[in-house]
Length: 250
Length: 72
Image (tube, rainbow over all chains, first blue to last red; front, side, top):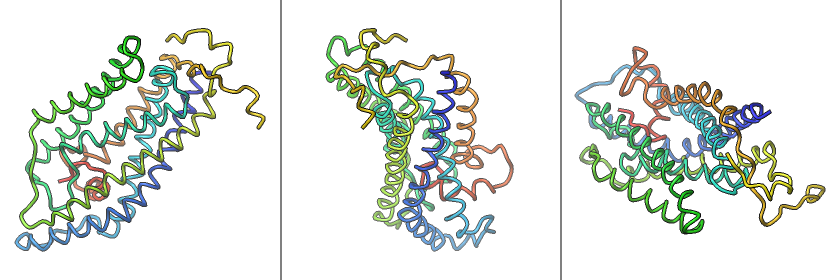
């Protein structure tokens, strides 16, 4: 029966991820694409010597079907992974019901999957970024994401350990502070990159990066709300009142 | 309002955790599949290439930029 629950939650997580991806796609198209186009216009105006390379995929396809493929697959894949994490977190991170667990998980995912790597290795529009360092930048980007995930898990365990002594609120604040300090230390020691070419509009860079944050905010907010709603209907909101006396053991 | 027959008590407990044995097979197979999908959206034919050419890179180009992955 439990395996059925996991499968159901997984399917619902991927559906919620798809829904979130659709909304994120609208935001990406409306807010992001104009900035991508502007950056490409800058790129082309400053690379006369290279001439025009053969377009493998036209801009019209890249900004519609290509963008949709990327954002929707991203939404479904992260929705599935988030659902698996939810299956593990449910009933293990505190006395939270399905909807609250989904909301907390989505907030944490936004922070560790996007904001943590972004603050050190922010999203770059076309024309920004040295192709020679793509390998290093990609490795460090994923390393920062992995560090965020591991440190968030560590902070959650720390919070659970401190809770009996400090109380839930203070334990959560202490664990959160430890997480921020650890991330700060990682930022201080990892190398940074400055690949913005001379003459590239600061406003355009700022708006591009803001639009990427908007995409993630919409994605994770939608996922948290939709998945929480769907999960609440599979997982009994609360165990029968007889269970209140029995401590939950894993 | 039939659902209010069993009102949640103030000291309500969280749902019982799902057993790890039930989660593990799904996490292993579907989790890995999802990571492979993310890899193709985020990094294939950028930093590393499993397939030759630039078709994948060009197809998901805009998504890669707007989802924050280093693209080129």
